[in-house]
Length: 228
Image (cartoon, rainbow, N blue to C red; front, side, top):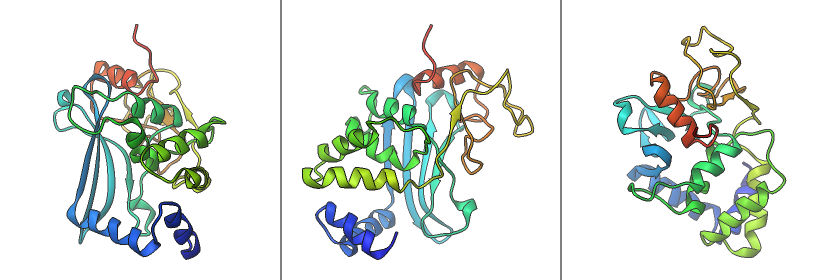
């Protein structure tokens, strides 16, 4: 982002680019970990850190029944330019809205739908955004305190400058992924596949190693498989 754009965006938040950068650097140095619980006991862990060999933000899906298994939605590393340090997108628009709006209020973590949507927004990559996408983001920004006169400009800017290439999401064909060499995992109806090669969800399951039953549960929690 050019310096003029950084100043413009920071101004919409009511601050300057230098002040915004300082707040972000402080959060990274201290380590930021946020838990977003959603359906069926799942949660997205948003973890940011600043280490000599690791710097950035990871978005992981976890479930207590998975043991040590994790599902990676995205990894954002703004300091290292090499593409292998970036992984995404991680959510379609439909999944983003569903996960943001269905907090598991019995579990600890962030429950406010507007905050959840904005925290998950960096994982979004979708070539087929609905006509009201900017209004949805604008409403979330206004709900968390963005000046109303600026929220629409900021929402439009964010959606015009996505972090990831616009992706197309589709259900896997047949009983296996289209690229069987990538783990030869059995596909789960409802867990969408991303067509962007840099995505953790390109030609593979979201959470590698979970059972078919756990996969179906995850698909329901993501809002892409209806319970029978």
